[in-house]
Length: 437
Image (cartoon, rainbow, N blue to C red):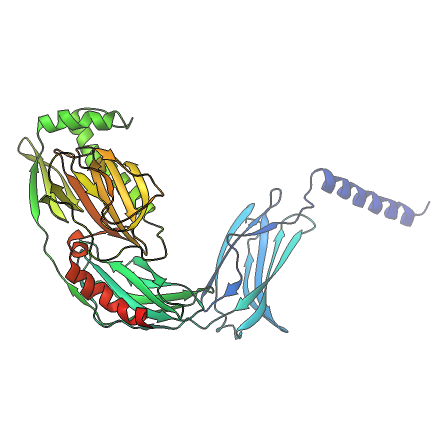
């Protein structure tokens, strides 16, 4: 036999062995390209996030481009030199205007290769819409005065392409809600009691492509000083109240003073997180009407009292009281402050037995330390309906009602919402032009 025959036979054998090895030990599966979220639009500054995974081989390269007609623009060409690992999390910024793209249809193209001998390749083509025009927004209300620790409202118009809109106050976003069918919205917002000075307040709208419009509007922030209050914690109070918490929470162990400090810090934060979660979704329509009801009785503590807690003459803690305490007769009937839907009716740590009412469009009221709860979550109530009775549950030394108002989960001064003149000047007068259309 000729040398050529032996050479061809050996070559075929090598390929057969490589094939057998590839089937047994190798990797014939291309990498997987996984999007972290559905992407149908490309805005002015579009973040693209996806992962490339391969269980057997390492990722060696990822290419990203976008094609519009016959014009294909490279966005990124990532090379990992065989050290990419089995997974790569990719985050890129696409700027269509810089790339010379026009608004309209386009195709996003992603390809990835692994380190296997045959360089397995995945390719994904995703139809997208390039949209670089931000939504339009305009202010319609005139006067915007707001107290630190207080509430405010804005009436504005926004174009139909806006996916969300509202007020940005520093890092806080307050969603707006439609009040007419022609694109008129109202947004209620708040300034926390400890808001920085100055704090930027902007009107914002964002569309499906992530394009964002922000405009400033005339407003006046009124600074307010809050009380400094010293509170002495007695052994009788600790002996009376701490067993209530240690019986409910397994991690509250130690002396009564140790338990108290955990309750006043860890449990307080846990309760506030729970309240914020409850208030994260609100009925889209305004359910409340007129000034909110104030429970009869004398005030004991005010909104944003800065409390210093002392035990046996030494300071042990500092906290801020984010509501108004009202004392009347023991187990005094507590009425719904306004129309709304019960969204929480249960025990809530330092607040004890608590009822939270959603009054619509981000406005909530909280009544706590109740001895009994007369309503259930999901039930609609009218202003004046009995929702419970005052009591001493939670971190309460005596029978009273703790009442709070919240705007999108931010505690605000209830006194404003009790005041008919404040309601008229800051809310109803602004809504009247929209309601008359």
